[in-house]
Amino acid sequence: MMKKKRLLLTAVGALVAVSLAACSSEGGKQEEEGTGGGTGAGTADTPRVRIAMITHEAPGDTFWDLIRKGAEAAAAKDNVELLYSNDPQAPKQAELIQSAIDSEVDAIATTLPNPEALGPLVQKAVDAGIPVVEFNAGVDAWADTGALMYFGQDETIAGQAAGERLSEEGAQKVLCVVQEQGQVQLEARCAGVEEGFSGTTEKLYVNGRNMPSVGGDIQAKLAQDSSVDRVLTLGAPFALAAVQSVQDAGSDAEVVTFDTNSDLVAAIESGDVSWAIDQQPYLQGYSAIDSLWLYLNNRNIIGGGQAVLTGPAFIDDSNIDAIAEYAERGTR
Image 1 (cartoon, rainbow, N blue to C red):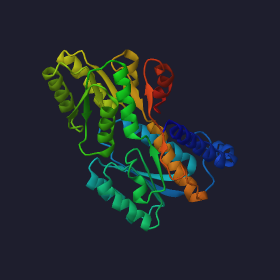
Image 2: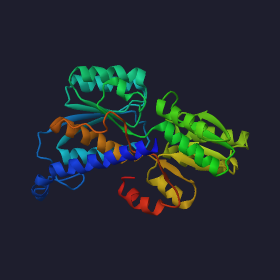
Image 3: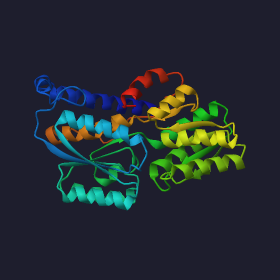
Image 4: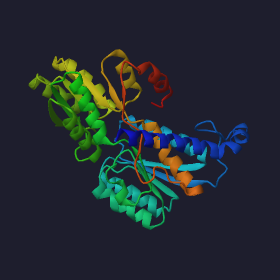
C-alpha cells in the first residue's frame, strides 16, 4: 500500500510538471503583458473554458480557503473561468451540481461527501458530456460515479496512521470529534483511528456550524471523563476550539488534529496542538482544476484509474519551521 501511495504521489508531481511545461512557451510573453498568474508561469494559450468547482465547505472553515487558493492559481495559469460554489448540506450541494449542468459548463470539479446523494448528479453530468473530477471526499466511491480522476487522501489510511502514532505515544483514550454527522470522509477517519489505535476510541458528534457549541460540547465531555488523554479533531478550526476547551475543563489531554490552516500552524509552533495530519488542500484544489484543463486540451488522465493521493503526512515540531513559511503565504 505504501509503495502504491508513493507512486500516486509521484503522479501528482508529474501532473504539475506537465501542466507547467504545456504553457511555458507562452508564459514569458503573457506575464510581460500583465496576464500571468497562479504559479507564475503565465496564462496558457488555450481557449478560455468555464469550470465549476462545487464543495461541501461549511461557513467559517478556513481549510477551504487553501482548496480555493490552489484552484484559483491553476485557473489563472490555465485561462479558466472558475465558478466556485459550496454548501455543507448534501441536497443543496446536489442542487449546485445540477445548476452547473444546466449552465453547460465545460467541466466540473466536486467533492463527494455523500455518494448516495451526489453520485447520481455526477453521473448526470457525465451523461451530458461534461467531464468531472472529484477531490477531497469520496475516495472509496468516486470511480462508481463516472468521474475521470480523484485527488485527495485515503481517509482510512490517514486514520490508521493517526491511531498508530497515538499508540506509539502511549495514549490510552482518544476522543474523536466529528463536526458533521454522515460525511463519509469524517466517519472513515474515526474508523481508521480505531483500527490503528491500541487504546479506547470514542466519537463525539458536534455541530460544526456553531463553534461556541463545539467548544462547549468538548469541554463538557472532558469535565465528565477525565480518562480522555487525547482530543482528536477532524479539522483545524475545531482543534483550536478544543485547545480552549481543554484549558476550561482543567484537562491534561493533548490536542491533535487532521488538516491545517495558518492559525493551526501557529498552534503547533506554540505547542498548543501536538501535531496535525496534512492532506495538502492547496494541491487538491490546484490538481482538480489543472487536471481538467489537461483533459479538455489534451485528453490527459492522471492516476491510471486509481485515486491520486495527496496525503497523509504529519506536521509536528520536527518540520513545522519549514511548513510555517508557506502558511504565511496562505498555501499550507
